[in-house]
Length: 598
Image (cartoon, one colour):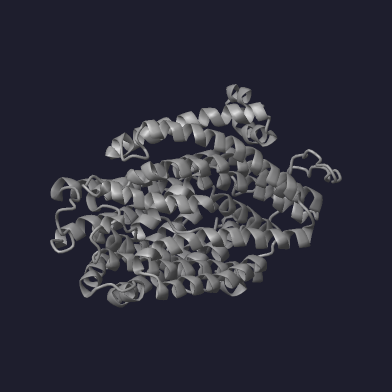
């Protein structure tokens, strides 16, 4: 898990120009395309396209390895076991604490200053030295204090855990909490490299992290064997097991940060210990940066409190006969990891490009072009997102089986994860929509609106979940929280839409809905075909698709292939225009794919 980046990027005159859009019915022609500015000093000479491709490749490889890590961890611990949840709690806390302590400040306040400093005569040597010194001193001290407080932190962030579970969680946390320091070091050095046009290192370093973690999980499985439902894993747990799993994951984070020291040394910048906060820009935090910082902190703190409730399932599971059927924190995080894949691969990459176009239009007060860019993004997202949504609905069970291990209860664990995937899938289209709508406000240099929406919905969501915890058994809380997450995505989409229309006018909601309906019909047709194939593979009768991780993987691959072919055929037959727009950037790199577009 890597630190969460800020959704805000400062507006600048180097933003990509907006191509001439097709004029929608009822709109006027947008302004002429602005002239292409000179390449900034911090942009690589090979071009941003090559740098973006390198970073995207690193992200993809890292995510694939993340899936492998989660699957192997399921073999070692079982995704719905006590030890899996205890380890997941301890291993996820460091990243969230880092973001709460300093992540937002680094991303929102210091990164713009880094870019500015990199253009100075000394290439930012003085500023970079002060920033690294500040990082080492402040995060080092904070990490020591937080690690010393491991037990009260575990107590505060868990729900109804027994003393034995709290003791195990504390043992894990003592090994994982030092990750806070190295997450911060990795983030700061990565941004320094980016500011000096050394793109790629920041995105590829997590690959090493995942490789190290996978290696230690394999060592664990070879040494102690895979999880067995017949044994009481928690009662027989040893210090050696804690060191291999928790220590191995922490070593991965350490090496992730250490890897960046080599390219940092090649920047030809004289770095030295430099104390003093003056000149770091901490006292010049703008209103936009401050609001963005508040939004990030509120969102992460809310997530922390929601996951505290989910941890109640860990204690409840031990009181039930079929405990493997109860999803806890590990299952929730796996389901979210799965759901985030299409959002990260398609929506995030497309939104990054469109964000520059939105920024350029907003900067030029060209509202017509801004509305068109907003409309275009939302429509194009429909193509990958509607297909992914139906894929998750059809394959929720076998997907869950990929991460549920090899024990006798693995099928029940896979079903539990699949249920969460299904709930998340319902809100997937809205997750992408609200993400892009929110970025529209950042493009207009309005960070206040996202902050107000976050501060409005966060307490409402917490009130709902904590009230539910009073009336519902703990083993239902994971379902409550995941359902709330999907509901909040829907609520944010509606609120951002209403505010956007009020501020900038109608951006063509009817055409956006038409795109989702058209691609939705095609996705449902593909889903029917996938349903039939999965039924033949025993996907609904505990058959071949459920027998093992391997058979689940083969089933998922076969079903997705059939669904993809049907989806393409229906999109072409229906001449869905958004499919052509979605394929346009891909076909420029691979001309043969242009034939697929209608």
